[in-house]
Image (cartoon, rainbow, N blue to C red):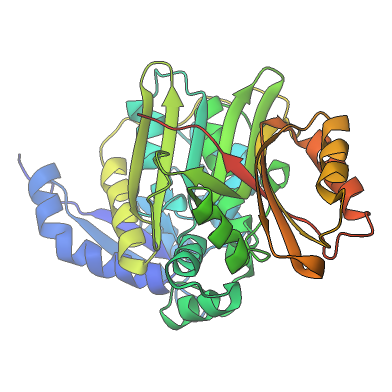
Length: 410
């Protein structure tokens, strides 16, 4: 391949952990990329809070890499770049899950590529596989562990018996969690990623505020110990699936049986399971966080953008967002051990159409505990039953509820 004497110019917005790692990786791999593609990529300018001018960088770039995060000025810069005919690579999940349709439309109008592999699951190539490899598959459901921080915390609670607070402190010491971990532990980070995956899987314009979201802050060592007795593991799971009435997208702590492909994903790793009649199921797994890992995904997108033609999802088709769907549930109750307690609870569940699959009872007297796993039921019916149970005078603390994913793949 005859080398192109003109370099492929990359304007870099942001020079934090990921931005600096990307700049270093691009310089390290530039010779190999030139040998493969015949064109050498190089950084044409860097924009930070204290240096660089966006208009100048835009004028001197063929492609813009946006790694500043957040909504503004990232949205303005990305739209300006595409209107000017520049390709864009971004790792900004908040931007895509909030303004995705506007940005996709701008890319189509500008005839440019928009690549965003690093916005979901770090180095795991879920975006490329869904948008390209499985473009002809009719995807029915996507399950994912898409936040490395929460997966690390839950893995440490399982491994050591630590409390949530202790495991979070350990994650912060190791750099897996931010000083303010709220975006991760509340499930909001995972919700943004699942909105993006749902958009690709179902061609539905799912916005971040349409994703039902629940975090891990209330998980206790007791929950994990009982899970072990029931043969389950605990993960923060994102799910997106087609329903008869539309599309359902959720993020929630869930118990998984051992044969589920996500059950064995530990530490700060991420994984995405994709289900389709054409392929049955495939699971992609790998590191979900870290500067060099994310930078590697960004550089992969830059290389893809150097090779035409553009690859964009088709225009979205409006579909209803379904929030009330069937789940299995784990229910943890702190109760006084008196005659008729279990019977009253079972009666309330039965009146709401909730069927009990298994029960574990621990303790005596005022310190008794009931742990139950339910058969699948509409969430609205189960939540109504739990609300009634919480009002019983012998229930000593608010009930704890965690979803259970029952399916296994063999």
